[in-house]
Image 1 (spheres, rainbow, N blue to C red):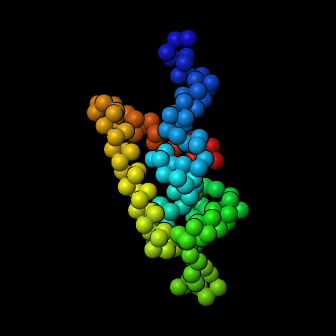
Image 2 (cartoon, rainbow, N blue to C red):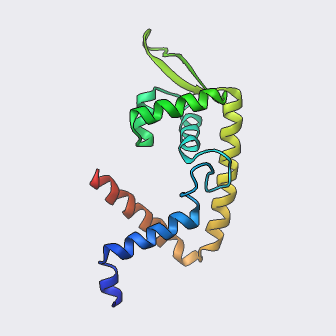
Image 3 (spheres, rainbow, N blue to C red):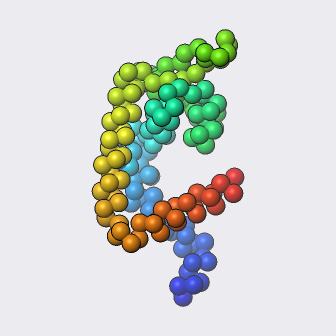
Length: 149
């Protein structure tokens, strides 16, 4: 198949994306691609809470692009680990926000450091003249996925 026709073949895209997912480790449900022993969804939740300080669960659901019930289970798991707590919302007497506990902040910091190390090594492995193209391709893929929703 010629290069031009290959680029229009959805099977080629599916195989390339599947290979990337496996190479990056996203298919391993109990370990992050950075080698940390928690699920990818837990790692993303910790990252969002570390970045924002506190979030309502509905906002965490939106950011993670997961179902409400999935995020409820996820928050329960993080609470059981002692990493997340529910506290009254400062602007709403009935509302609740999620925030990291001190051990949750430490876990988020450890994850952030592991990510920095992994992505630094990965970036160094990509030839400098290819890096902008890689970032552009990732942006294009994300935009296409957003349009599909």
